[in-house]
Image (tube, rainbow, N blue to C red):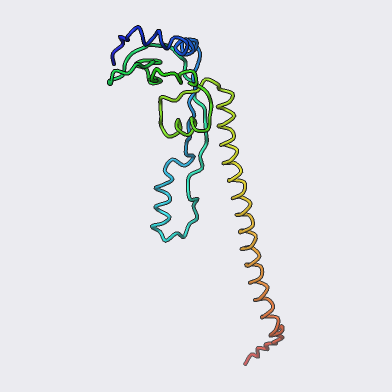
Length: 192
Protein backbone atom coordinates (compact mmCIF):
# COMPACT_ATOMS: atom_id res chain seq x y z
CA UNK A 1 0.00 0.00 0.00
CA UNK A 2 1.40 3.35 -1.04
CA UNK A 3 1.66 5.91 1.79
CA UNK A 4 2.29 8.92 -0.47
CA UNK A 5 -0.87 10.85 -1.20
CA UNK A 6 -1.60 13.75 -3.47
CA UNK A 7 -1.70 16.89 -1.25
CA UNK A 8 -4.93 17.91 -3.03
CA UNK A 9 -6.65 14.84 -1.53
CA UNK A 10 -5.81 16.11 1.95
CA UNK A 11 -6.82 19.69 1.13
CA UNK A 12 -10.18 18.68 -0.31
CA UNK A 13 -10.96 16.31 2.60
CA UNK A 14 -9.44 18.28 5.47
CA UNK A 15 -12.62 18.52 7.54
CA UNK A 16 -13.42 14.80 7.26
CA UNK A 17 -9.80 13.82 7.89
CA UNK A 18 -9.65 16.00 11.00
CA UNK A 19 -12.71 14.16 12.33
CA UNK A 20 -10.84 10.88 11.98
CA UNK A 21 -7.69 12.44 13.44
CA UNK A 22 -9.56 13.32 16.63
CA UNK A 23 -9.94 9.58 17.25
CA UNK A 24 -6.20 9.10 17.88
CA UNK A 25 -5.73 7.70 21.38
CA UNK A 26 -9.41 6.82 21.63
CA UNK A 27 -11.05 3.51 20.87
CA UNK A 28 -13.15 2.26 18.03
CA UNK A 29 -15.56 -0.63 18.33
CA UNK A 30 -16.86 -3.55 16.36
CA UNK A 31 -19.81 -5.82 17.06
CA UNK A 32 -19.35 -9.55 17.17
CA UNK A 33 -21.89 -12.36 17.03
CA UNK A 34 -20.82 -15.66 18.54
CA UNK A 35 -22.58 -18.99 18.51
CA UNK A 36 -23.00 -20.51 21.96
CA UNK A 37 -22.63 -24.01 20.52
CA UNK A 38 -19.50 -23.93 18.42
CA UNK A 39 -20.04 -27.33 16.80
CA UNK A 40 -23.80 -26.84 16.29
CA UNK A 41 -23.90 -27.91 12.64
CA UNK A 42 -22.08 -31.13 13.51
CA UNK A 43 -24.51 -31.84 16.36
CA UNK A 44 -27.49 -31.09 14.12
CA UNK A 45 -26.15 -33.39 11.41
CA UNK A 46 -25.64 -36.18 14.00
CA UNK A 47 -29.24 -35.83 15.19
CA UNK A 48 -30.50 -35.97 11.60
CA UNK A 49 -28.33 -38.99 10.77
CA UNK A 50 -29.72 -40.82 13.81
CA UNK A 51 -33.29 -40.43 12.59
CA UNK A 52 -34.14 -37.17 14.40
CA UNK A 53 -34.81 -39.05 17.63
CA UNK A 54 -33.15 -36.41 19.78
CA UNK A 55 -34.36 -32.83 19.92
CA UNK A 56 -32.19 -29.91 18.79
CA UNK A 57 -32.71 -26.27 17.96
CA UNK A 58 -32.87 -25.21 14.33
CA UNK A 59 -29.89 -22.90 14.89
CA UNK A 60 -27.32 -22.12 17.54
CA UNK A 61 -28.19 -19.42 20.04
CA UNK A 62 -26.07 -16.33 19.49
CA UNK A 63 -24.63 -13.77 21.84
CA UNK A 64 -23.65 -10.31 20.69
CA UNK A 65 -20.57 -8.60 22.06
CA UNK A 66 -18.82 -5.30 21.53
CA UNK A 67 -15.05 -5.37 21.09
CA UNK A 68 -12.94 -2.26 21.61
CA UNK A 69 -9.63 -1.41 19.94
CA UNK A 70 -7.22 1.40 20.78
CA UNK A 71 -6.44 3.78 17.93
CA UNK A 72 -2.64 3.52 18.03
CA UNK A 73 -1.81 4.96 14.65
CA UNK A 74 -3.40 6.87 11.79
CA UNK A 75 -1.98 7.09 8.32
CA UNK A 76 -3.11 8.32 4.93
CA UNK A 77 -2.27 6.22 1.92
CA UNK A 78 -3.58 4.76 -1.30
CA UNK A 79 -5.06 1.35 -1.87
CA UNK A 80 -3.90 -0.88 -4.74
CA UNK A 81 -6.19 0.93 -7.17
CA UNK A 82 -4.68 4.30 -6.22
CA UNK A 83 -7.74 5.52 -4.28
CA UNK A 84 -6.91 7.52 -1.14
CA UNK A 85 -7.53 5.75 2.17
CA UNK A 86 -7.14 6.26 5.90
CA UNK A 87 -5.31 3.41 7.64
CA UNK A 88 -5.94 2.92 11.34
CA UNK A 89 -3.46 0.72 13.23
CA UNK A 90 -1.47 -0.27 10.16
CA UNK A 91 0.19 -3.69 10.46
CA UNK A 92 -1.74 -4.54 13.64
CA UNK A 93 -4.49 -7.19 13.98
CA UNK A 94 -6.93 -4.32 14.60
CA UNK A 95 -6.04 -2.63 11.30
CA UNK A 96 -8.79 -0.78 9.43
CA UNK A 97 -8.61 0.67 5.92
CA UNK A 98 -11.29 3.18 4.98
CA UNK A 99 -11.65 5.06 1.71
CA UNK A 100 -11.32 8.82 1.97
CA UNK A 101 -14.64 10.17 0.85
CA UNK A 102 -17.19 12.82 1.81
CA UNK A 103 -19.02 10.29 3.97
CA UNK A 104 -16.04 9.92 6.32
CA UNK A 105 -17.97 12.19 8.66
CA UNK A 106 -20.48 9.35 9.12
CA UNK A 107 -17.76 6.90 10.21
CA UNK A 108 -18.50 5.55 13.63
CA UNK A 109 -22.22 6.28 13.59
CA UNK A 110 -24.33 3.39 14.80
CA UNK A 111 -27.06 2.36 12.37
CA UNK A 112 -28.79 -0.98 11.90
CA UNK A 113 -27.46 -1.22 8.35
CA UNK A 114 -23.87 -0.57 9.46
CA UNK A 115 -24.15 -3.12 12.27
CA UNK A 116 -25.46 -5.79 9.89
CA UNK A 117 -22.61 -5.10 7.45
CA UNK A 118 -20.04 -5.22 10.25
CA UNK A 119 -21.43 -8.50 11.57
CA UNK A 120 -21.22 -9.94 8.04
CA UNK A 121 -17.50 -9.19 7.95
CA UNK A 122 -17.10 -5.68 6.49
CA UNK A 123 -13.93 -4.71 8.35
CA UNK A 124 -14.00 -1.14 7.05
CA UNK A 125 -16.98 -0.44 9.32
CA UNK A 126 -16.08 0.74 12.79
CA UNK A 127 -18.03 2.53 15.50
CA UNK A 128 -17.08 5.29 17.90
CA UNK A 129 -20.30 5.56 19.93
CA UNK A 130 -19.81 2.65 22.33
CA UNK A 131 -23.02 3.40 24.25
CA UNK A 132 -25.17 3.20 21.13
CA UNK A 133 -23.38 0.07 19.90
CA UNK A 134 -23.70 -1.65 23.28
CA UNK A 135 -27.37 -0.69 23.35
CA UNK A 136 -27.90 -2.24 19.90
CA UNK A 137 -25.97 -5.38 20.89
CA UNK A 138 -28.03 -5.72 24.05
CA UNK A 139 -31.27 -5.34 22.08
CA UNK A 140 -30.11 -8.31 19.99
CA UNK A 141 -29.11 -10.23 23.14
CA UNK A 142 -32.48 -9.54 24.72
CA UNK A 143 -34.20 -10.80 21.57
CA UNK A 144 -32.26 -14.06 21.91
CA UNK A 145 -33.23 -14.23 25.60
CA UNK A 146 -36.90 -13.75 24.67
CA UNK A 147 -36.63 -16.58 22.15
CA UNK A 148 -35.00 -18.78 24.80
CA UNK A 149 -37.68 -17.95 27.39
CA UNK A 150 -40.46 -18.64 24.87
CA UNK A 151 -38.87 -21.96 23.95
CA UNK A 152 -38.50 -22.90 27.63
CA UNK A 153 -42.18 -22.13 28.22
CA UNK A 154 -43.20 -24.17 25.17
CA UNK A 155 -41.02 -27.08 26.35
CA UNK A 156 -42.53 -26.88 29.84
CA UNK A 157 -46.02 -27.12 28.30
CA UNK A 158 -44.91 -30.05 26.15
CA UNK A 159 -43.42 -31.77 29.19
CA UNK A 160 -46.64 -31.28 31.16
CA UNK A 161 -48.66 -32.72 28.28
CA UNK A 162 -46.42 -35.82 28.23
CA UNK A 163 -46.63 -36.21 32.02
CA UNK A 164 -50.42 -35.89 31.79
CA UNK A 165 -50.46 -38.62 29.11
CA UNK A 166 -48.40 -40.92 31.35
CA UNK A 167 -50.75 -40.27 34.26
CA UNK A 168 -53.80 -40.88 32.06
CA UNK A 169 -52.32 -44.14 30.76
CA UNK A 170 -51.61 -45.34 34.30
CA UNK A 171 -55.15 -44.49 35.41
CA UNK A 172 -56.58 -46.50 32.50
CA UNK A 173 -54.60 -49.54 33.60
CA UNK A 174 -55.70 -49.11 37.21
CA UNK A 175 -59.37 -48.73 36.18
CA UNK A 176 -59.19 -51.82 33.97
CA UNK A 177 -57.68 -53.92 36.73
CA UNK A 178 -60.38 -52.67 39.17
CA UNK A 179 -63.09 -53.75 36.72
CA UNK A 180 -62.05 -57.35 37.31
CA UNK A 181 -62.39 -56.81 41.02
CA UNK A 182 -59.96 -57.74 43.73
CA UNK A 183 -59.14 -61.42 43.58
CA UNK A 184 -60.07 -63.12 46.86
CA UNK A 185 -58.50 -66.47 46.35
CA UNK A 186 -57.70 -68.58 49.37
CA UNK A 187 -55.16 -71.30 48.91
CA UNK A 188 -55.03 -74.17 51.37
CA UNK A 189 -52.14 -76.55 51.32
CA UNK A 190 -52.61 -79.99 52.90
CA UNK A 191 -49.81 -82.17 53.84
CA UNK A 192 -50.22 -85.53 52.75
